Length: 419
Length: 209
Image (cartoon, rainbow over all chains, first blue to last red; front, side, top):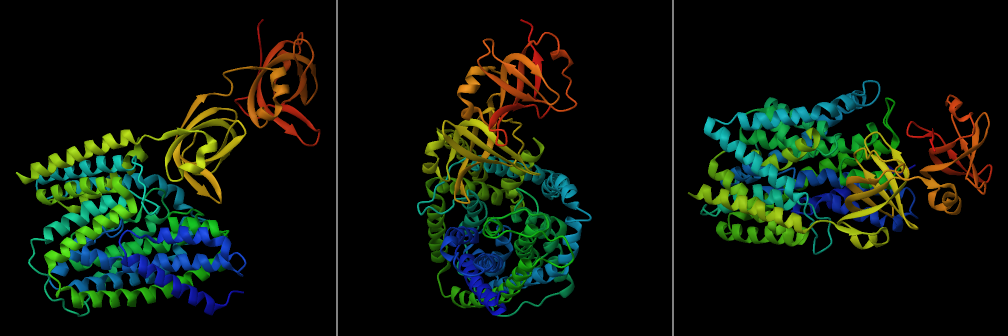
């Protein structure tokens, strides 16, 4: 029997790893998962090595979704799942509420863990036996994505904006179809995804360029956000539902879940948007682990590493399999540690950021972001990054929704499904 | 004015990426070279020697000479054992073994397009083991579960197992010249190779000489 204390320790260690990967833009928890998988033979002599390393990956992937809001807010460097959260978070930073944005995001993520536990059993029965909605759901998702794309475009404020929105959506979409055909290679031999430079260019760089016009970042208020519990609850609920929904689908990432949540939530203020989108990311990481046991599918790099490390026992009764119970413990530990770590790092940076010259910080950040793009995706990544920045700037100029740039993911997925 | 500049730059950028995508077309390699192409997109060809169809994916093993390679595909390849295929995909390591995550699987030659004489099958049995083959020969004897076909000189012969509901009435007249499309495999129990009619693609056709 695995010692509970050992699981708690491993979960805490995993959580710290997740904090580190979350704070460094471009470094994904999947990279750590793959490294751990490669290191698996060295640990094989340890008793229960597979369950311990898997728990480490689970807790790291959860805490990563908490901490990645920090670089997104302060330096505008997005990941796939934080791309849409940059905009409200950055606005809040310029209002002196950067810490509040971080704090709201941490609350959204922690709330998502709570909600995810609430829908754990229904999720199991709806997607597994006896209902087996998984198959039906898989068939309707392309239609949901098509509807979302239409809603994104058609709900712009005027006909002119609708035309502009279509242009941005299709431009991003064509760009998205191209980048997946490019061979990227990282100079440090890290797994290179074209999405990092694409999203950093579409969402991060234009925000940074725009913020160069800002004179300074105002002093940040270090105070907790006052939350409307009902509104926050709705946001977390919708975020959790979207995150869980896409966790089981092949080829659909949590970035798509953020778009679904945003459309489902309707027009909301910045605070609500941050809570909802943060809930999506954490819920998605949670349900990706659960999907391994319910539909026996690995839907992320981390889940794939777990599947390879450990034989997964399908959850087909009421009681979860023992290994899932260990993972759930790891998720709780990771959630608590990451919640406080997010607020801790957010507070430190918020306290000091106003003492730095913002144009200088913006320039340093742009150089750092370009450097990270190069390190993780090489020269080809830089090319993608530049083109994405032009598309992002074009979108800003047309004054249409920035989320339309998510055509970069939506159009290739729609084409794969329908053609 | 600035918006047109960004539009132009975006379009030129996309065209430039398109040009780069054309330039970075996958390299055509042999199975032996696979380890030097980790993470790269390649084109590799071989003959399908194993196929496992799962709910949402397909796992193939292709062989070229003495080398074999695992292919993982998330779409149905519509291939059969013995088909010659060209696979485009990304090279990855899975459970310590090299594999290609397929983006496209093109059938170059269906296994049944070329018929093999019985002597070639006999002399290259290991090469054809585990594949669908199209063999020509003469029916020698018919039993309840199998029949025997032989070549013109009677130097080689092989058992062809057929399902109980398979109609063999047309074979009973004059022991005709036939073309057998079947799965060629080694039977450990009888220490011998045989042809097996297993699915709808397989069958025996009388040739009109």
